Length: 246
Length: 243
Image 1 (cartoon, each protein chain N blue to C red):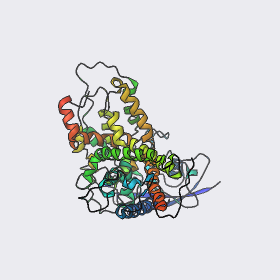
Image 2: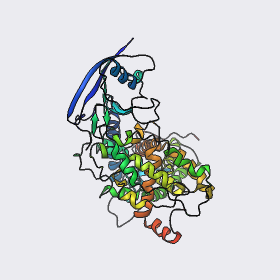
Image 3: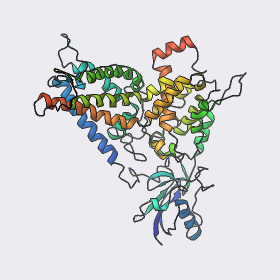
């Protein structure tokens, strides 16, 4: 049986460092299994947030060999085991203990998004082709990996100016909803800071649900904002035809 | 505050994340040098019945002292420079903003303004460059069709095939564009009321999934088409007539 050297970050907001553990690797094992092995056999107080172990709850996000991933979805045999495997807490959010970070900022931002607003006399009939785009965005498990990998939040710490990819797909879901009547263009441009995104697509690369965050949500939103603020032809058309919402 | 204390190095990634940006930067630099040289050269761009895509449409203006290529190349250059795919490519490979996912950007942390300020706010004009580049594309198709017309009548040479392929690849690149996808239907919230636009949007969405591939293929094809005509004009190679 192969043995993996796991270098796990142990510490809290005051500091910490890597601790190395030898973990026997079994067939089908994922990184979260290795963390559980460490808890059971070496350090029972190693903190890790997890819930479903099925890549659906979005709790076990961490940085494995430097890449943001779900620990429950990362198989040990997908990693080069001839070198130590590093497991760190996600970088963009404040550490609480070991692999657990405080992601509450995301939920605060989520609350600021103007909610779904149907017309008063809405007939609740929708066709599949009208809701299909939004359904892709509803696959989001709120693991915050996209928020974590986004350099605007991760490195530049623009949390006061940029809502992040997860929030942008939430806004896209609402904006593209056939029965929604609200207009979030101004919110997108100012509060959500859409202009900060330089579409380097890291959010899409790390999404465990394979949501096309950039191509299907962020870029269409940028185009909608361009319609309103950067395209005089569209602006004129809107003046004549009324709101872009239907 | 971000959790900076746990990770202070440039990156903890162990894979070869730097290969992609390096290859991209190399190719774009070589293309940039070659196309700039060719655009200013103002020679060796016409060998009947072929014309280099860098010089089409050929505009002879007495008031313009420089190469006529400069009168038109702003359109495809602007289209590529503001393209959503190329933005990713050059932000990563030249501006290192960031060079790779989970890799520290080059810019001082906190100094980033993205596309909210000049000059990058101008990326929002992508659709206008799309319109302009589409006009140029129309001329490239005319050139490609004209490449069947030899002195002795209808014919097909290697150059004909190259110009046809170039126009086709450029068309796929143009019409898989994110702005075009938005214009044809992406802006709608209720597709069921516009079934034709929904079908077109669906088709463009399929092309759009391969926008990156079309961006590279068309970049190579336009450079190779020009190079082929340059080599013909210099007499280094001769065109092979197939028909």
